Length: 84
Image (cartoon, rainbow, N blue to C red):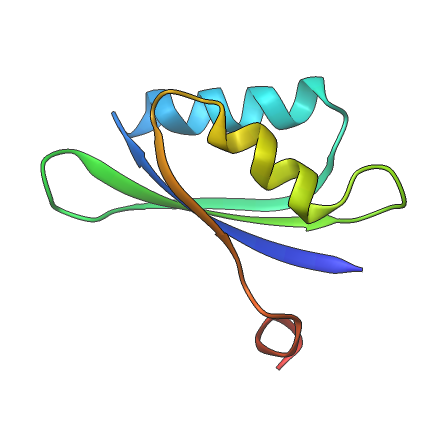
């Protein structure tokens, strides 16, 4: 099942690389990544689409991302909004 994660990060591209690197090391199946500037003191929003499996679900990915210092907030988009 595909899930969409939103993360608010600081330091722009540096935050993006930290998030993507963490998910890659944990072997998540990332389908798509996008980033846009929020225009507030260097903060950016990262949107990640990933395919879940039994061991690597969106909740675990969110927990891993919360451990990264430059990540300020992480949330999972509701399933019907991803598919609709």
